[in-house]
Image 1 (cartoon, rainbow, N blue to C red):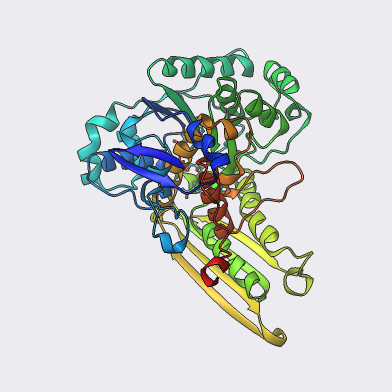
Image 2: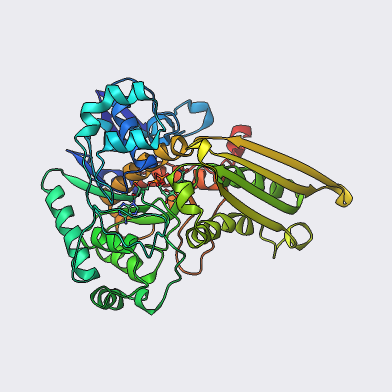
Amino acid sequence: MATKKKSGTKIVAPSSMGRKTAAMMIEPAKGKLGVMVVGLGAVATTMIAGVEAVRRGLAKPIGSLTQMGTIRLGKRTDNHSPLIKDFVPLADLKDIVFTGWDIFEDNVYEAAAHAAVLDTDTLKKLKPYLQRIKPMPAVFDQYYVKRLNGTHVKKGKNKRDLAEQLRADIRAFKKTVDRVVMIWAGSTEIFLKPTAVHQSIAAFEKGLEKNDPGIAPSQIYAYAALKEGVPFANGAPNLTVDVPAMIELSKQNAAPICGKDFKTGQTFMKTVLAPAFKARMIGVKGWFSTNILGNRDGEVLDEPQSFKTKEESKLGSLEYIFQPDLYPDLYSDIYHKIRINYYPPRGDEKEAWDNIDIFGWLGYPMQLKVNFLCRDSILAAPIALDLVLFLDLAKRTPELRSLGIQEWLSFYWKSPQTAKGLYPEHDLFIQSMKLKNTLRHIMGADLITHLGLEYYD
Ligand SMILES: NC(=O)c1ccc[n+]([C@@H]2O[C@H](COP(=O)([O-])OP(=O)(O)OC[C@H]3O[C@@H](n4cnc5c(N)ncnc54)[C@H](O)[C@@H]3O)[C@@H](O)[C@H]2O)c1
């Protein structure tokens, strides 16, 4: 039996005896978890302020699977579904300590006020705490994000020097906490493809020395994190860790990595609807997706080279879900178009429209329209929090920490990362099952297959 004690209660997971040691080998979440956030903009400040609001009992962590989600253990008749955070040893919110980098000097209070996601009343209550979090100077180069220009930036003789400065920041922070995780909530960089410099650690390190243009700032942060054995999550669609050199480094230093680009609004809905059409063998002829968005992210994405990076990430999911090679009559001829329009009056309150041209029995056409009036950072903040907590768990789990890519975290990404030659799983419900079964597995509990024949014996 796998057990975990929490406030005097004991969560017991049904398991086969052979797997019980797995859970015991997970290191406990003792002490402080340091979270280093790259880019203290809308998403980051909404996460940080949100965590503090929850810690003070001012609000509930809605949207966070780690804080509100449950996990069924055993048979349906057992009625045993503890909270995930009571089942696996996750860091407690009260033990999280935030720091970060940005190209602007604003502290987190000022940055949150500028992002205008949370109302002024809430921010005022949190002001003393948020004001204390001040960004460290960033590694930045406008070549990679054309629409931004900041002055709070590190200087170095080459990219290797900049990476060393980031490593020094990480090491200094490590002295104040017990464990560290890094998450990129910085801007979307221009579209980059992997080149020779990304093929091995040695090539990458040579590239840092020679200022290779294929190495973007996000990769300098990721390299610094992985070199220091720190797990790294990438909230933007940037290339970053999606290259052999980073995967190698992640494995070598037991620093978990995962996919990229938070799956929040439109793609979240796509990965719910597309599996439903496929499950019912409904054909799809066209999928037109458009958005209006007025925050700084929208401004950055208004620039064609940054948009291209986002577009690639958003386009991928349908192709993989529909498997046109297996279902040529249904999905081989889909016109998939995505637009993001910068429209300042809306701020963070994005509006997304989808027009989906589908067809059914004997090919008769139908349409579905989705109009999602969402709030970008309200959707992204709990995802960022969950990723930080799960990556910290992965780092403490012997079976996971040296795998490199944590495919079980695909659930959170527009572009899940997978082993070479393996197609990514985009279906949200398969991703959710994979995530929960991974948690059961590392805790030595029985997996849930949903077979259920035993109820009819
Ligand atoms: N909000 C969502 O729903 C969502 C979904 C998926 C992905 N994302 C991505 O998350 C990222 C953050 O989104 P946001 O709305 O918070 O954007 P934002 O523009 O409000 O914040 C980004 C911050 O990163 C900083 N920055 C840029 N380059 C940096 C660097 N090299 N080092 C340090 N700081 C740097 C900027 O100064 C800014 O403060 C974007 O890339 C966005 O595309 C957001």
